[in-house]
Image 1: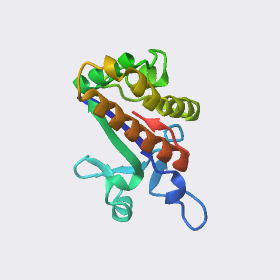
Image 2: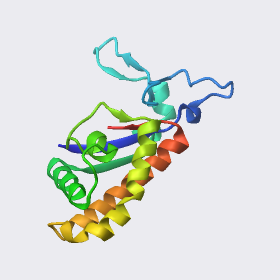
Image 3: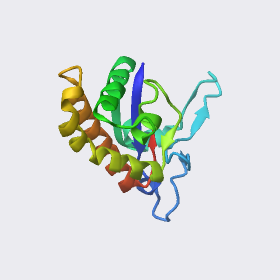
Length: 167
């Protein structure tokens, strides 16, 4: 168990020449996730992606702009604590909407949250320089810096694709 974050490719990547979404695909307008329509095999009853969609987009990663494994449940707990130690507030987007659980899913950061998170991430270097001595583990700084870099990549992808960051 752990925490993953994804930004899906914008549906514009899957438009036909007529400007319509490929007829073999569906789009979740809230998350921006594009995925193949499914069909049921009449003989077996199995549900699977439409053969035509699978031929066009055989790689399930074709729909993903950026995916990050933030960490397992224990790592998320340690990261959350380390960020508190350097002064990241409990009510920050980082703490309250990203790291509040090591295994949350089905929620997302929309544009407003993403902008707040970006500003919070920009403050990490100064918080680290002022409060590095408050970290209990030597590896905590590496975790924090890695987390900041991963979240910045997700933010760049979210802005580029016009989609939220989905957990």
